[in-house]
Image (cartoon, rainbow, N blue to C red; front, side, top):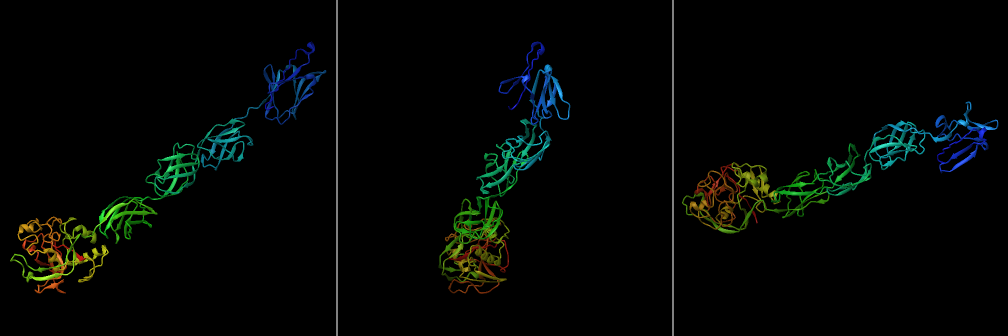
Length: 603
């Protein structure tokens, strides 16, 4: 019997009058009833082990005596004059307690109501699964027995100690933030709030790209996301694929970067685990998108990384070797020698970016001038030619050569030299205030930019020229006049009148006292612009009078004090802008707002 209820129902109706023997009836839990004649019962004994029960003696429905079975040694029915009259209860170290049977209505055994367990505190109030916490309070029982501690969602399985006022227990798997209670003999205590700290075991994978899905395994995440959030450093993930107590699947958010990943649930922050963002470099633009070899190009985008660290920029198939600066959002590099028009890409950590088209153009837009023979000197109709323009003589240019289509513009000069000395500034204006020494230095540096062999060896004020080099140089005076006349013999390659000059040149009659953007006037027959007017163009030759004999590829005297300039300028009259006009500089070092540059190189 799980729970014994013994009812002694004795109806004593004046035994002497009715001579009826009293009966004892025992009512059992299965609803059966056992009846015994008191005369046949010698003794009723209750074992001390039934300490969880009490015995109540009722008289007229009122409890008149109550004994814990733990203190009852035995019970006997006492006969007086052969009549069973008393129930005697023996208690060790105490006088027997006698109860007149005629006065007893019933005897009931029942379970003692257990005291309700009460939790006063939990220390700590938050922990990770597997940590030990201490629960203090009252009436937990001296031994655990069938008692237990429950966490929201789970029952504890591991206990370090159990006492009446303190229980030390491990937070079980499956526990969630919420309430903790103790259940003692099926009686549940009050509840205390406890928070489970989320604990990350690992990321899979620990390296990923933006937009990839990664799995975060651990425990204490909660069966639903609720207030839970996942952070990549300080960037919160907005796309949660799934969420369970032991696994979260999340998409790596935009703007994430290498560092740590952690979980925050309400005020509880998990441990941190390392995460590496696999950068996917993305090019948004390149500036400019048309450029010469040796120039600098700026690449804007994202995912380049904060430093180069082995990353590369590739111009079609040629890798840039000179990187001026590198950041996550911008790269500045020099266009490598050998690059051809195609697509540019950036590779970071073996991941290649999108490709952006670009065009390789020459630093200098040049025109091929064919070889030929011409009459050098004042072949025009103007009687005002200087003495130095005579005598007219035959000159042969034996090899074709390239000449710059335009006078060197300020944007080109600045890109090569890093400075702009011009008086009248503008990217597409011809550079001015260029001395002869500055001009040959520019030629060398431009040649270096393009990967060409320099023509000039410069040692202070001593300059020599390697005519076989393929780099840029200044034209000889003969080359300049041959290219300017373009097989014409008139004063101007555009005709004989000043109005015809005005159609081809900027001079004092139409310039308003300033230089003008190149290429706005009519070109000559070879396709060269501004050979007359705008700015003077220095030549290689030292100035001396013509000898009058025919010559092939003349380069002027080996020494002198004045260098030749050709073409006239915005400041000069029409007469000084003739094709045969020989101008000069006071010295190779002089700078003037009327002086610029035009370039040539071998075919």
